[in-house]
Image 1 (tube, helix red, strand yellow):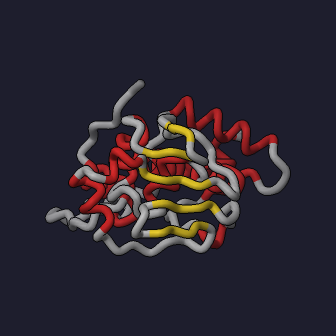
Image 2 (cartoon, helix red, strand yellow):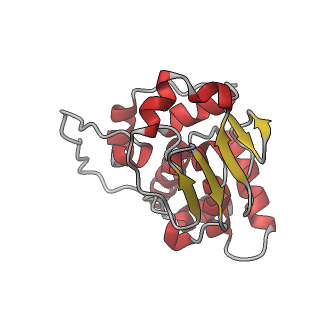
Amino acid sequence: MGVDKDPILKRCRSLDIDPSHLGIYKESKRAPQRSHKKMSEYGLQLREKQRAKFIYGVREKQFRNTFEKAAKKKGITGENLLIMLERRLDNVVFRMGLAMTRREARQLVVHGHYTVNGKKADRPSMLVNPGDVIAVKEKSLKSPKFKEIMEMTVGIPGWLSVDREKLTGKVLDNPTREQIDVPVEEHLIVELYSK
Protein backbone atom coordinates (compact mmCIF):
# COMPACT_ATOMS: atom_id res chain seq x y z
CA MET A 1 0.00 0.00 0.00
CA GLY A 2 1.37 3.40 -0.95
CA VAL A 3 1.67 6.08 1.69
CA ASP A 4 1.26 9.77 0.89
CA LYS A 5 4.28 11.50 2.44
CA ASP A 6 3.90 14.88 0.74
CA PRO A 7 4.12 17.86 3.11
CA ILE A 8 0.44 18.68 3.73
CA LEU A 9 0.65 22.49 3.64
CA LYS A 10 2.71 22.42 0.43
CA ARG A 11 0.15 20.11 -1.24
CA CYS A 12 -2.73 22.28 0.02
CA ARG A 13 -1.08 25.33 -1.56
CA SER A 14 -0.59 23.58 -4.91
CA LEU A 15 -4.21 22.35 -4.98
CA ASP A 16 -5.60 25.61 -3.55
CA ILE A 17 -7.27 23.90 -0.55
CA ASP A 18 -7.77 25.30 2.95
CA PRO A 19 -5.85 22.93 5.32
CA SER A 20 -8.80 23.01 7.75
CA HIS A 21 -10.62 20.56 5.42
CA LEU A 22 -7.98 18.04 6.46
CA GLY A 23 -8.28 18.88 10.17
CA ILE A 24 -5.09 20.99 10.18
CA TYR A 25 -5.41 24.49 11.58
CA LYS A 26 -2.01 25.85 10.61
CA GLU A 27 -1.42 28.53 8.06
CA SER A 28 1.31 28.27 5.49
CA LYS A 29 3.86 31.09 5.79
CA ARG A 30 4.32 31.20 2.02
CA ALA A 31 1.94 33.05 -0.22
CA PRO A 32 0.14 30.84 -2.74
CA GLN A 33 1.85 31.02 -6.11
CA ARG A 34 -0.31 32.59 -8.76
CA SER A 35 0.22 31.38 -12.26
CA HIS A 36 -0.58 33.81 -15.06
CA LYS A 37 -1.26 30.93 -17.42
CA LYS A 38 -4.91 30.03 -17.91
CA MET A 39 -5.57 26.43 -16.92
CA SER A 40 -6.90 24.13 -19.64
CA GLU A 41 -10.19 22.29 -19.25
CA TYR A 42 -8.28 19.03 -18.71
CA GLY A 43 -6.05 20.75 -16.12
CA LEU A 44 -9.12 21.92 -14.14
CA GLN A 45 -10.66 18.43 -14.24
CA LEU A 46 -7.41 16.77 -13.16
CA ARG A 47 -6.92 19.26 -10.30
CA GLU A 48 -10.46 18.55 -9.05
CA LYS A 49 -9.75 14.80 -9.01
CA GLN A 50 -6.44 15.36 -7.21
CA ARG A 51 -8.21 17.54 -4.64
CA ALA A 52 -10.78 14.83 -3.86
CA LYS A 53 -8.08 12.14 -3.68
CA PHE A 54 -5.90 14.26 -1.39
CA ILE A 55 -8.72 15.35 0.96
CA TYR A 56 -9.98 11.79 1.46
CA GLY A 57 -6.50 10.21 1.41
CA VAL A 58 -7.32 7.77 -1.39
CA ARG A 59 -4.92 6.41 -4.01
CA GLU A 60 -5.70 6.35 -7.76
CA LYS A 61 -6.78 2.70 -8.08
CA GLN A 62 -9.11 2.90 -5.07
CA PHE A 63 -10.52 6.21 -6.30
CA ARG A 64 -11.25 4.79 -9.75
CA ASN A 65 -12.95 1.71 -8.25
CA THR A 66 -15.12 3.96 -6.07
CA PHE A 67 -15.99 6.05 -9.13
CA GLU A 68 -17.01 2.94 -11.09
CA LYS A 69 -19.27 1.78 -8.22
CA ALA A 70 -20.78 5.28 -7.98
CA ALA A 71 -21.48 5.29 -11.73
CA LYS A 72 -23.49 2.04 -11.42
CA LYS A 73 -25.73 3.44 -8.67
CA LYS A 74 -28.93 5.34 -9.36
CA GLY A 75 -28.70 9.12 -9.19
CA ILE A 76 -26.00 11.64 -10.08
CA THR A 77 -22.60 9.95 -10.41
CA GLY A 78 -20.59 12.86 -8.95
CA GLU A 79 -22.80 13.10 -5.86
CA ASN A 80 -22.74 9.30 -5.43
CA LEU A 81 -18.92 9.43 -5.54
CA LEU A 82 -18.66 12.07 -2.82
CA ILE A 83 -21.26 10.30 -0.64
CA MET A 84 -19.31 7.02 -0.94
CA LEU A 85 -16.03 8.77 -0.03
CA GLU A 86 -17.78 10.46 2.90
CA ARG A 87 -19.07 7.07 4.17
CA ARG A 88 -15.57 5.55 4.41
CA LEU A 89 -14.77 4.48 7.98
CA ASP A 90 -11.65 6.66 8.27
CA ASN A 91 -13.61 9.73 7.14
CA VAL A 92 -16.55 9.01 9.48
CA VAL A 93 -14.14 8.63 12.42
CA PHE A 94 -12.67 12.06 11.52
CA ARG A 95 -16.13 13.63 11.07
CA MET A 96 -17.23 12.31 14.48
CA GLY A 97 -14.22 13.98 16.08
CA LEU A 98 -12.74 10.63 17.17
CA ALA A 99 -9.46 11.62 15.48
CA MET A 100 -7.81 14.99 14.85
CA THR A 101 -7.08 14.66 11.13
CA ARG A 102 -8.10 12.31 8.33
CA ARG A 103 -4.56 10.90 8.17
CA GLU A 104 -4.63 10.22 11.91
CA ALA A 105 -8.09 8.64 11.58
CA ARG A 106 -6.78 6.31 8.88
CA GLN A 107 -3.79 5.28 11.03
CA LEU A 108 -5.92 4.69 14.15
CA VAL A 109 -8.40 2.59 12.13
CA VAL A 110 -5.58 0.46 10.67
CA HIS A 111 -4.20 -0.07 14.18
CA GLY A 112 -7.59 -1.44 15.25
CA HIS A 113 -8.68 1.19 17.81
CA TYR A 114 -12.34 1.26 16.71
CA THR A 115 -15.27 -1.11 16.56
CA VAL A 116 -18.27 -1.02 14.23
CA ASN A 117 -21.40 -2.58 15.79
CA GLY A 118 -19.19 -4.19 18.47
CA LYS A 119 -16.82 -5.86 15.98
CA LYS A 120 -13.21 -4.81 15.41
CA ALA A 121 -12.84 -2.77 12.23
CA ASP A 122 -9.40 -2.11 10.76
CA ARG A 123 -10.18 -1.32 7.11
CA PRO A 124 -10.24 2.46 6.46
CA SER A 125 -12.11 1.89 3.16
CA MET A 126 -15.03 0.08 4.84
CA LEU A 127 -18.33 1.84 4.05
CA VAL A 128 -20.60 2.51 7.04
CA ASN A 129 -24.38 2.37 6.77
CA PRO A 130 -27.21 4.14 8.59
CA GLY A 131 -27.66 2.57 12.03
CA ASP A 132 -23.99 1.56 12.42
CA VAL A 133 -22.46 2.35 15.82
CA ILE A 134 -18.78 3.29 15.84
CA ALA A 135 -16.93 3.21 19.16
CA VAL A 136 -13.40 3.47 20.50
CA LYS A 137 -12.28 0.09 21.92
CA GLU A 138 -12.31 -0.22 25.74
CA LYS A 139 -8.53 -0.79 25.86
CA SER A 140 -7.82 2.28 23.73
CA LEU A 141 -9.92 4.65 25.89
CA LYS A 142 -7.17 4.74 28.53
CA SER A 143 -4.50 5.97 26.12
CA PRO A 144 -3.40 9.63 26.35
CA LYS A 145 -4.27 10.09 22.65
CA PHE A 146 -7.96 9.42 23.24
CA LYS A 147 -8.00 11.48 26.45
CA GLU A 148 -6.76 14.38 24.31
CA ILE A 149 -9.41 13.65 21.65
CA MET A 150 -12.15 13.56 24.33
CA GLU A 151 -11.35 17.18 25.25
CA MET A 152 -11.60 18.45 21.66
CA THR A 153 -14.66 20.32 20.51
CA VAL A 154 -15.75 19.62 16.96
CA GLY A 155 -18.74 20.39 14.75
CA ILE A 156 -20.58 17.17 13.95
CA PRO A 157 -22.49 16.92 10.63
CA GLY A 158 -26.25 16.31 10.85
CA TRP A 159 -26.05 12.74 9.52
CA LEU A 160 -24.01 11.61 12.56
CA SER A 161 -24.58 11.69 16.32
CA VAL A 162 -21.76 11.45 18.88
CA ASP A 163 -21.47 10.83 22.64
CA ARG A 164 -18.27 12.69 23.60
CA GLU A 165 -18.17 11.12 27.09
CA LYS A 166 -18.10 7.53 25.83
CA LEU A 167 -16.39 8.33 22.50
CA THR A 168 -19.07 6.53 20.51
CA GLY A 169 -21.09 7.66 17.53
CA LYS A 170 -23.95 6.52 15.39
CA VAL A 171 -24.58 6.94 11.67
CA LEU A 172 -28.11 8.36 11.49
CA ASP A 173 -28.40 8.55 7.72
CA ASN A 174 -26.38 8.67 4.52
CA PRO A 175 -24.97 12.17 3.92
CA THR A 176 -26.56 14.39 1.30
CA ARG A 177 -24.50 16.57 -1.07
CA GLU A 178 -25.54 19.69 0.92
CA GLN A 179 -24.01 18.18 4.10
CA ILE A 180 -20.64 17.53 2.44
CA ASP A 181 -18.51 20.64 2.81
CA VAL A 182 -15.45 19.63 0.77
CA PRO A 183 -14.37 22.16 -1.89
CA VAL A 184 -14.71 19.77 -4.83
CA GLU A 185 -16.68 20.29 -8.02
CA GLU A 186 -17.56 16.66 -8.63
CA HIS A 187 -18.99 17.22 -12.12
CA LEU A 188 -15.44 17.94 -13.35
CA ILE A 189 -14.29 14.52 -12.09
CA VAL A 190 -17.17 12.86 -13.94
CA GLU A 191 -16.21 14.74 -17.12
CA LEU A 192 -12.58 13.62 -16.71
CA TYR A 193 -13.47 9.93 -16.34
CA SER A 194 -16.05 9.97 -19.13
CA LYS A 195 -13.47 10.96 -21.76
